[in-house]
Amino acid sequence: MNIYENIIILNASLADEEIEAATGKIKDLITSSGGEVLKADVWGRKKLAYDIKKQKKGFYLLLLFKAPSTLIKKLEDYYRVFDPIIKYIVVRLRKKEMDAALQSISIVENPSTAGEKTEQKSEA
Image 1 (tube, rainbow, N blue to C red):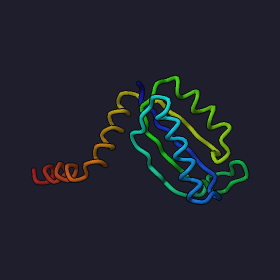
Image 2: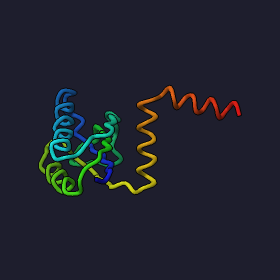
Image 3: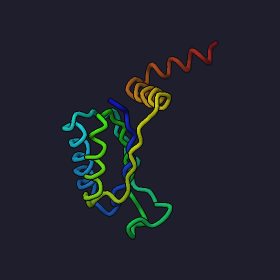
């Protein structure tokens, strides 16, 4: 299985409950198709660089997941018809990028060990 990074821009005018429901549907689609969501990072509402579908703001969501390559076509087809999504991109990570992404996940999960490593470096 490959590791993918997926940035999704949802319609910012949606209520928080609707955004959580849309995020849940996307995660369910990934897990039900044999994938595993490694990290879900909510960036929140931000101003868009340019208007997309007459929207000036978007709600940004970053997903890092492990999935078979057949899931990506199914996921992109779903994004095209799912109304809350105004823009998306799915990128397969290469070996170096995978290592960096997995390392960032382990730092997020174990912040105490990350702090110990930096303290050890500064003492040396």
